[in-house]
Amino acid sequence: MKQCLLCENETEMESWLPFFGAKAPVLCPRCLGKLEKITGPSCRWCSRPMEEDGLCLECREWGESLFAGNISLYSYNDAMKELIARFKYRGDYALAAIFAEDVRRAAKEAACDLICAVPLPPSRLFERRFNQSEALIEAAGLSSIPLIGRMESEKQSKKSRLERINSEQTFYPVGDAGGKSVLVIDDIYTTGATIRRVAEALGEAGASTVKSVTIARSGA
Image (cartoon, rainbow, N blue to C red; front, side, top):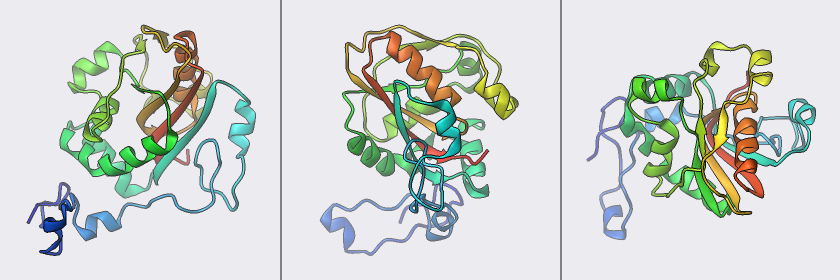
């Protein structure tokens, strides 16, 4: 039996399943039950849950761009907030394995030519010792290439919604996307400001379109 990555209780798995190549779950039923997958109607650009499929007001305000849409896998509820805080800010790198299968499946559905991680500012990378975007990609068994870099900037979590939307460009091209479609994988989608700045930099690197897969969709 394997231990749950969150509470360390044993996970449950039928004893005969390993004979068919099935992997033991990384979360126990109790912890898994606290996470809320986005399954109902949602915005076709940002995955914001809505009463019916369509385009949310926020995405209408952003308008058309190189960015072709985001797929978020889970709602940013209290359990997800705690999980991501533990993963991202307290350095529990192993928690990326929780989302490996979901990320792998979503990346396949996105069907992009290249995968790119969202880089951290140098000081933030030094502080955390790892990039959560790269960790999610690696845990899913995917490969990414460095196409953009990032200048020093204030933490997005400290900014208001308006400040995020009006934030200056901090990303810049460092590679050549050569007319390819690029998939960006990251942890949280909030206002869309970060991914759109990323898309702008990837456009300068030669990308034809940019999509994103994020673990959680915040309602902020």
